Image 1 (cartoon, rainbow, N blue to C red):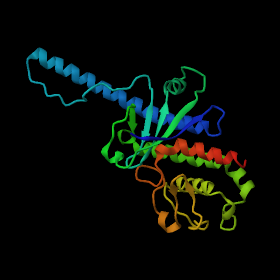
Image 2: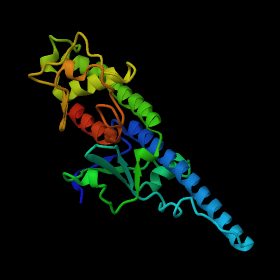
Image 3: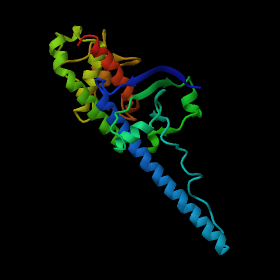
Image 4: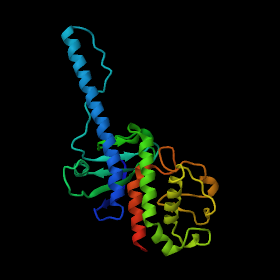
Length: 254
């Protein structure tokens, strides 16, 4: 079974609450549409089967095996192919109701960061959760939204970061926390075609930008690579815990 790493919460007054609710809206909207389509296809298949039975003809079932197993938007699991970590957003019904304007109450977003044990991700271990995997959605749409969310989250705090540590350049780089360097390089890549092109500021291999277990080792190792997405450096399914951690870091000195 997967291992729980940390449980986190975005309250409405959280620094990055708006970014978090926008992120959830994309996953919920796409999963809702895909489930509507699947349910429609299932209904069409059932109708075709009944028609064949009445007509006494053979029916070859090629549609979905069952209607979607999704009850009141309970738990939404966000995952990327080949990423050992995934996020579970709990109790999505209040989020869905808020996004649909059924209520004006801004919901608390409760989620957890989890990790597969070695070998589990390849074995596709069944989880006791309703899962929405990115491989069922539109990855490029998710990536674009995450680029905008992460980059704008950095920009809203850029002036405060410059005031605290100075402009980001080789002279000031030693005083910038490695987490904020990581945040800054993500932002730069997001606003430059979702590709890393680190020039001038550079990466110090002796003190590389890092977030949790993710490290940007050097300019040469990362330049030219995609920033966010299923085939990128940063899996977009980890956007919520990333923004949560960045807020914790910012609260420490702003």
